[in-house]
Length: 92
Image (cartoon, rainbow, N blue to C red; front, side, top):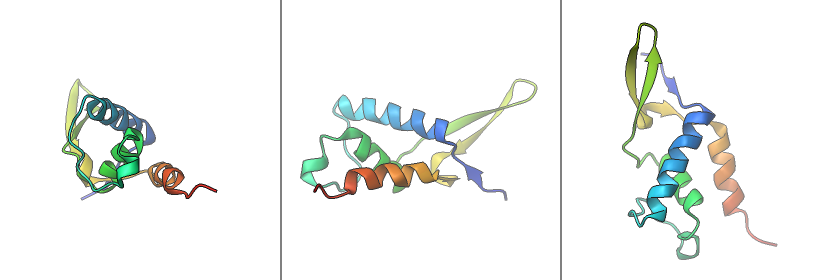
């Protein structure tokens, strides 16, 4: 079976939707340091990296068909790791 890859545009959309949910008081699904709980983008990126989100992508195919892929079955883009590293960098 071929591995699916989550492209950076799908990743950005998932993060945006999850940030909106967190902004509307959704529960945080991963352990985050208390001082970082207000940074919803960091929290959403960690949740995606730890594969805690239950999201399915609908990918189009020819002839008005589509197939579904669960986010947890996809390889994540390197940009996600870079985003998390930016927020985990200690302040000087």
